[in-house]
Image (cartoon, rainbow, N blue to C red; front, top):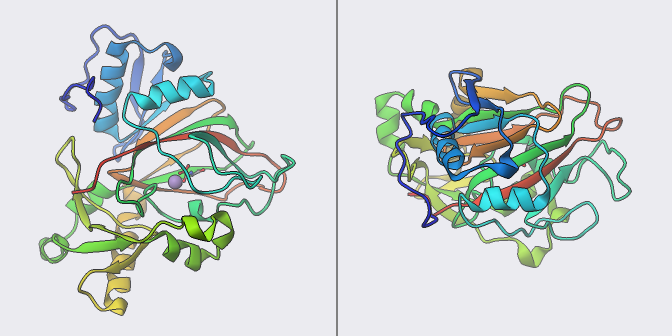
Length: 296
Ligand code: OGA
Ligand code: MN
């Protein structure tokens, strides 16, 4: 955690010395912020944003004009920026602030974007020893219809499990594997073989380091459960993910031009929805990710 970051009381929405407006978007997660230029956010704004982030898990700040340096500065307030190993459409490794886009090397919209993995439920970089804390996306080019991003609240999903199931899974450890995803989706091309990170073990039920809330930590990278037969493990992973991603736990971000969205990967999973004409329209989001700690 950054040294300038104060412990926060996430239950109160401190409006002191800030002028922006925050509206809740659903009772599952998400709030919308208007009347704020993030490039000029004051430290009081940032403290309030941090409280709102922990309370709502996902914030949408409308109509932001931000360059890469602005995005980096905002991200760095929350922690170290993630370095990348995955490749761009032009074959280069992604920079700390990079684009996520359905375009080919010439910039034309493409029916089969390089990153297929985003269409499956995941928490960013959950296959690393220190998975992502926060992901930011800035909507630079949005298709005229669709191109949504969907999120599921893994804390609510955990809370609603029957007591016996909670007890059964509480101490389990799950293997999260980048290679498992590559093989499942036929995505070897997105990374050089030598850079594939080795699988890691994480708690299946993790505790949020700042709020103390528990959540399910499963998604498309989950490949095994320690001490469990493979077929049983696969059944349990599929069952938990199906439970957690029921509509009642989800929120769908319907992009507006220049939305700046950021979410907590420690409590949410997400996926892109291919509900737009990919071959006809470009969808370009500028992206930056903050690294988190070791899940406990
Ligand atoms: C991501 C991601 C989904 C989208 O940026 O990590 O999964 O809708 N994006 O592009
Ligand atoms: Mn993602």
